[in-house]
Length: 469
Image 1 (spheres, rainbow, N blue to C red):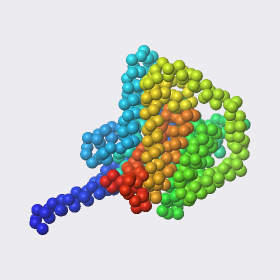
Image 2: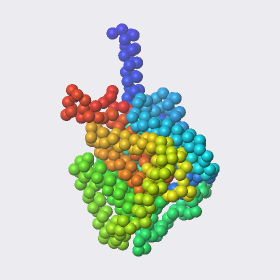
Image 3: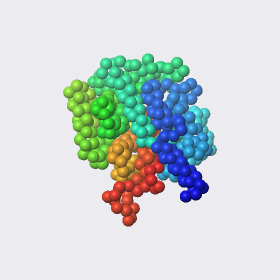
Image 4: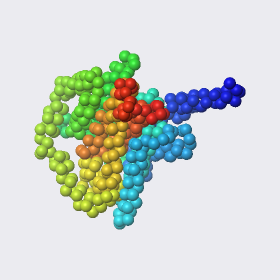
């Protein structure tokens, strides 16, 4: 072999090693997207949601400000080859379609005579959604390894447990620590922190650090599948016990919100996760939920009675009647501006009727086109997670795919029961779940059904050039 051939072979070997290091997340020191987003989740769950940076209103929630920084980070990364993953991604493309529809709605909104309050609301909505898009995109394109993705989701579960502990103290002992979590550089975006109230016969109803009781209950339910995944793949007994305890704790804490929406979220999680999971996952999930039910029934009979009334007298409930009446309010507004709506952030419950349905709020604000694009983001993320769950090569990938799919489905469904994306912690959690589904699909090698001519028993996964970084 000539000297030139040896040099070329050496260069090829070096390039291959560099490529492998980049795809595995090793190599030169780099900022961990998983760690940054995980810390953002802890910030979102630990700081009471009604505390914001001065002058920004609802867009000044610290986690959303960090999200704006992530959007800048993602945009800059597109100009620096190798910093984030390149190549097409269906979920990223779907988000970009939504961004276009959002900007069209935002622009058209200013063509009508808007009061100053609606102009401010539209600008705040632009900042909020920019932050949420930034978080999703850095996860989709910036998470380089399964270890990094697991770190992110572990920190998300830890954040949920922190909020759950605050809510449990409120519910069980009437101890509200949220007043002690006031930070000097933040201001309240409401008259007071929500804390604790009662529902039914003096049964406490708590919000933890969330902005509302419903948000607290739903968040606890959304994290149950991720905690269960952590227990299923734990490699040590200590981690397995911790994640199993977290699963039981989150399922129980969700009920402390005394919210039907939390029960709906738990039900969706079970209905989506059980048929797709392994028998071990099914037994674990049902066992933990049954244990949580026994704890509540035996230890908190007043809570059980209250839920019985909430569901038993649902037709007479004022909240349910208000939700069904929302459609009469929405139809004339949609008929006036059907395709791109009145403009994002312009429908305020302080001016108009409160709409306890995110999808109705979206239709009024960003129109049929924008709402369809937003729904498509959820749908694409769900099916990417489920494709990994069905056709992923690694059993850990398959388990995580099913669990992420269950959480995303629950987030989608409960959005019919409250204006979910107006609540910052729910919104941040949702885009973390969506982005994680996109990152998992990429890291798992873009799995799908075997193509014609392949042996489905060989690996059960179609790859495009091997595992993508």
